[in-house]
Length: 369
Image (cartoon, rainbow, N blue to C red; front, top):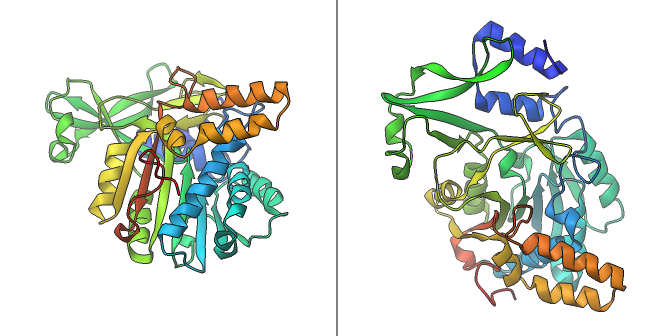
């Protein structure tokens, strides 16, 4: 019995074509044109399913705006630069970023804003948010649609939502993990019938001695390649912030969140958010394979400290009421902290750039302006 319209569609496809790769299941759940999670709702905020860093504190977006201005300076201050955000949510981060960037008027004057968004609901929110800006803005379905020219790309909590492939180690090789209809009639995880040919040679060396039953994940999307190629051919820099691991490792990190709580990824397809941790080592290796220069990855807490978050928070507190000061302290603690519900350690920052740009700001102490 299907719990959602999308589950009925998934069951129909499985009955017609056989078990479905995890990658395809995740892609349908998130971006099906009629029933997909991101194409049908605004999932952000207290009334949604999760809260991202820009919703926690304005300081986050402000620092990224100054980061972008500094990156532009190191690019040689091109007169026309495409400032791109992929997956801009409600537009909160970009509004904060552009407000902070007013301290570098030449950068603001050079910017044309490009927002890559698949959700009609969120695009509408972004257009309302950007209506008051004095910066030209355009929307795209994919990053590849952004016009040629130098770019500065921001991607916060984007890569975790890109579909992943999963494979399971068995005594005679690796098998793709699939979604099937189980013996009890419910959706269930299973394994493909055939071993993945030559897969042992493709996994990172650290994966070759893992135990039977171990799961290896890798991103199915070509965005990392496309992004790195663009930076190499057109010039520019990108900043990726997300949760994940610094080094490739075995493990099933596919998870679902609904109403700010973890739920079963196979229940209520299309109604809950599906994500998987970002393998930052794999992301860095992809960029380096295209010739790009990589900064990091480092923990988000260290990155934000290097950008001066504590100094900026102190400035805001000096202008605020006692209640607001407590709010600022709480928000900064959540962005920098290492606890289970905090973002400073779990989240990482990775910079990718054309080699001519040199070091990107934020990845070492005292490297901002």
